[in-house]
Length: 288
Length: 249
Image 1 (cartoon, each protein chain N blue to C red):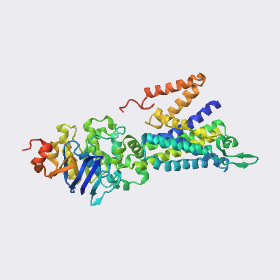
Image 2: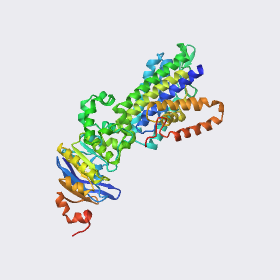
Image 3: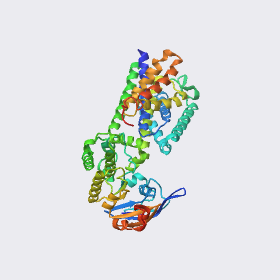
Image 4: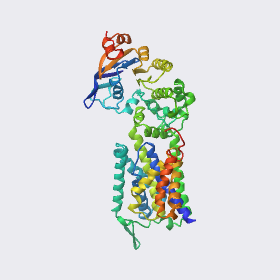
């Protein structure tokens, strides 16, 4: 049973990661920086609970704020460029953040062991859950409480004028500014909200795996973050959830028995899914 | 109300608009005509700030617009429609009007929170009026991409009006319309004037331009070759040669 709870934890965290890219994609921006905000959230929360002895809940709040603040700061210069240039700019930022954590040492002695991030060795022993005696099922429920909270928030955005404005910018920037929408403000706000969500995802990730290192936040993770909402479609937040279940639950875990054939099938099934549902799982057959 | 002084826009060696002077008074319907590629749409893009000026000054309500960004020009009262329709196709008709409510009045009326994250209740009445005006009330929940061509043109006009503009720039609003639709468009334009909206009408369809405008300017190769009342323009030999019929008498 713990295997399934563990898988549910992974799916929950990846859903949050995908949703952080979802809101940015609504404005038509492709950001490969989501893994960096995820990393910042993970390291910030881990340091607060391990080195600072904080409870996880306030640490999650600080991680969300840190992710949002960095995303906002990155958003202003990065969103001046569009399309491929933005992909490259955010990719460079993501790799830069990863390399900072690769070289980041900050250890303090706790009893007779030293704890904290240790460069390439990573940040081990983020043991908030085991130290407080949480079971795997409880950790899973804790993670899913945040997944539901964030999905509800984005669902509400989608129903509000803000959601329509995000989609208007994503469809036609020129028309959007011509009807009086401030493109920079809207794009940076989406980036900021996305950064906050990625920060929460990273904080939860650090605590359920208990060990993070720079390679947990590489380009592959950034690619997964944007792949989920693209595969799931931008119609609503459930597409992203379904895409994570499809990719993590079925393609990666479900096909594990196939060994090397899995990777081949993985690619083929993604291509098939995109061909059968080009506008995502909830895309329907509307005119493009 | 709107004044262009020596406005120029060059793209490389091409002088798309060259030393253009124009003065549109409050309450006028001003026509801007000229052959394809004569700089009409470029002029609209310059007034709304989508392109920077190469030289010259554009002022609105006696204020130099300078390098003011497009969205602030809209908020100061200049709205437009597009020659090639640019609706938000994946939004509903209703949402297309909702996102366009960006006048200072709308921004002041609701607080930040209800304006951005509130539901649809507070603004229903005004949008219903706009839908009524453009004959789209029965299509409110339809996706804009699924509308017929004439309906899309009507929605574009309604979307521009959602910003409560003082000056409306119409970029070939009759393109592709049949004569019945052109008649309806004429009625709508005249109704807007009754409400006090000043209109700059860029158009090829002479039946519409000659029927509704108070004054017309003619562009050719980026330069103004004539300006006057519709009657004066129709009898101007230069205009006839450049544009209207070729038979230079």
